[in-house]
Amino acid sequence: MTSTHIDVGAIDFGALAAWMDAQALPAGPITAATPVLGGTQNVMVRFERGGVPYILRRPPQHARQKSNEVLRREARVLAVLKDTDVPAPRLVAAQTEDEPVFYLMEPVEGFNPSTGLPEPHAHDPAIRHRMGLEAAAALAELGRVDPDRLPGFGRPEGFLERQVPRWLKELDSYGKLDGYPGPDIPHLAETAEWLERHRPARFTPGLMHGDYHFANLMFAHDGPRVAAIVDWEMCTVGDPLLDLGWLLATWPSNNGHVPGLPSPEELVAYYAALSERDMSAIDWYAVMACFKLGIVLEGTHARAYAGKAPKNIGDLLHATTLNLFERAKDFTEGLLGRA
Image (cartoon, rainbow, N blue to C red; front, side, top):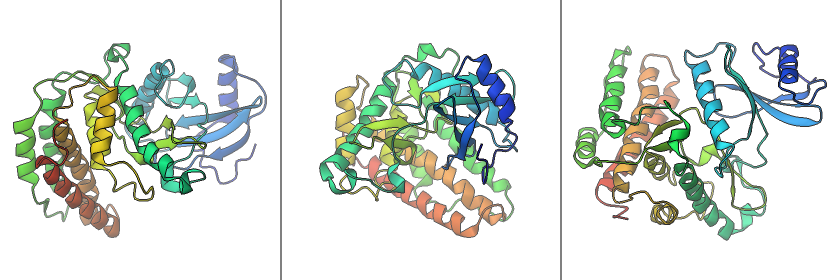
């Protein structure tokens, strides 16, 4: 087994092999173990056993407070998605009773566009344009999953009503950090007020990814198809249109390395054609996503004042927060129109 440079934490490969035997998975030595790099704080290791490749996902050695619960939720969602047309990693088996929680999934055959574009994508503008539409199509497919397949998952009742107070409370909590002077965010109060005034009266609950943007998508090597939506740490049952709003809020600022993507209006129209959801308030969801993401990023800015994050990163994310609130202002003025 190749273990050089692997941050395996507390992984016991002998115990893993015994557990796999109990799941009736192919036997043999665990070989070719290598880390899977990415933005997640959980450990992912690719390995082979019995001629079959796997990805192991488990908490880090020094787990965060909710690490095990997050992985339980991920495994539960991936188990449901396995029987749908949603492009997601294929769950093989999961150990959720004891801690540390972990699960095995099949490797995804695809690439993330944030690491660069292979051929034919790099030199085919039609493929790049279609990649954006396929991102909307995959999201529409996720929105069709029956949330009743996940009883007790999330709190859809009052989901929209909770959003603005929840995130204003989060922003207020940053004041406990030493040195943070408080949020200097133009349009903050106006955006919160606009969101409360224009909040949709009702919605149809559905499964949400919770952090849906290009960096969490892998695309097929041979075309524009989404091979998998990855990093399900924020998944819940809520209002799936907030996922679409999240895609709009981060579009195309996180996707500048993929020229020729569709416009936000094209994304909305394409999603609408594939969904029965009421799209009349899509601008609200885009504003809500800007509001939430901006506040989340401001947290790192606040921690930088307290010496708990690098100042340059804090400054960069604060600038991103300001851009998100400017984008929110554009959305409140009807940039997307009414679908």
